[in-house]
Image (cartoon, rainbow, N blue to C red; front, side, top):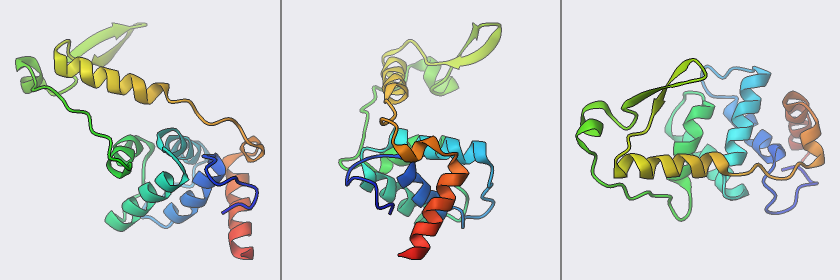
Length: 161
């Protein structure tokens, strides 16, 4: 772990340490934009440093596939301590037939899926909004680097220790 990090500081630097582990997964794409999205997703969805570690450990011990940023919110829910569980009402007839995204709305000239207006859909929408609203941690000096520069720094420090 980077020596300059405080014990519970959730930062892209800690996410970068974990991404080094994830880089061994099948089909890992060493694309700066995708790696940056993955690091940001890990930080945004983690409760603390141990939670980032738990997410990556579970993923690596469960599959050889590469972790995608879209997998992180569900993985965070599964590995949180205590577990994050949203008790949902039963689906309405529309949700039963079409799933949890049954509506199509037009926004700025584009079609988008939308949650149902039933109690279940509104509870899911509230959970979506809470997850989206989670702030990123305050920037630390390591966040001023590109994600690839940060990954190289992490690799150097890991090999030196």
